[in-house]
Image 1: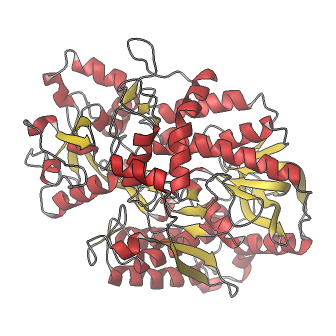
Image 2 (image 1 turned 90 degrees about the vertical axis):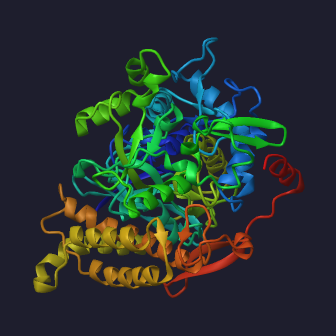
Image 3 (image 1 turned 45 degrees about the vertical axis):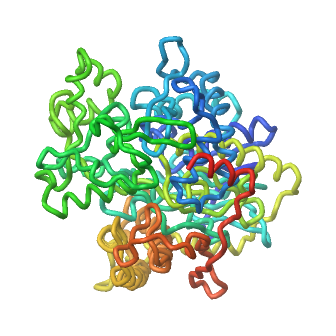
Length: 608
């Protein structure tokens, strides 16, 4: 058997984004020895791409905001299939987590009286997003890393985990390899926290970076944990569409939060054509100012560009399909028009949206202070993920925890902008705390040497296969390309039964092809080998998305079916749970959504 290096920890955290860093800090603070593994370099986490802000009811800009309204907004955005306990804890604890981040050195934009400034965002009734220009995620990662380096956490960079290891039913550790040299590593751990993000790289057009291949979802699934809500995948309405080399790169919702408007090729603000009754209680006297948005005795004025992301994305697709799109297949997002309202608008835009100004200037040779941007939907965020307990974040496998995007339930059918960063902080802390507690209360588990040997054998197959490959060999790059094409075309923004059934068949064929994938060369500096191993994760999550989407015969949140365009009361009471069957086949069961307690239901009703 190939040699490997062994490490021992109380808690192993896989993923070094916001959730992983916050979990590591908390677990270490509880006295646990902590190992932190990241697939890329520390600081490269996809959290840095979250630009708009952190959603928390600080009430600094509008004193009417509170956790109850935030909770109700989150439940409504998630179409009431959320894990209510997670939504409740998130709304209650987010303000403390933001203040904590500030105490650790985060530098937020300020109001005139030096409170943390908050901006409007889609689906939120009040200005709620604490922000640092349009670089909020970057500031979060900087702050957490600076704070975390003093906690005695061991960091293993450029290391990919390929299997979770168990002792009976409980977790025992993880096995991976160093991406640079290809040397194997065994991590013994009493508890493991998965914080690996999403799986946008299963799609052709995505805002996600290369690391987002569904590693955590697949690791948990293979270890016997349940996945939930996998059919709900968010397509952010505004990604770059031109030039082709940058298609899909995120254009933050903060552009719309600062006054950016969406127009079609005819110059029309088309979002006014389709404001759902759920949000429109009465029309404003001047539609250009937005609609009047009332909840009980509370009132706010909202522009239609800040409706939920699923709705805006579908409206953009409609404009393009009906021939009113921009020259390169999107629509126009215009922030430059605010010079009609604001003195010295170009300087204001550059100050509020410095990353966006630089991004379009450098990548598209376009000055957003003078010209509109071309934007279109891009695969962005996975609401579905590992099913966890709302309080502890532990999965259905004892000792295995999950936080952040790879954990499901919190966002229901659709995530509100800004809730992702506060989600990372709230549940990263909880996952680290309870993982440390589990490690303290349970003795160390024993890793099965046979499982390690089998994992090594599996991992080396793409390299060893080249000697006998011949004409039957498959390129892992081509398989990934074909998978991305399949998911983009058949399980995208608008879905139907025939296309999803076709996708399921194609994914099954791609799995067979992946078994023949060949990575020429050896283990050192071999990106083909990395891609061949990632295929297992991508195919697992793609199968789960396609199969659950095909089963849910209604439209809800980010899941829109043209053959079932309405919501179903029956389906609204049920979630789809994915687990690995005893025969290795994927099983999907329909289970009731958690019943909301009366006191929380009352909050929801008051804020409808």
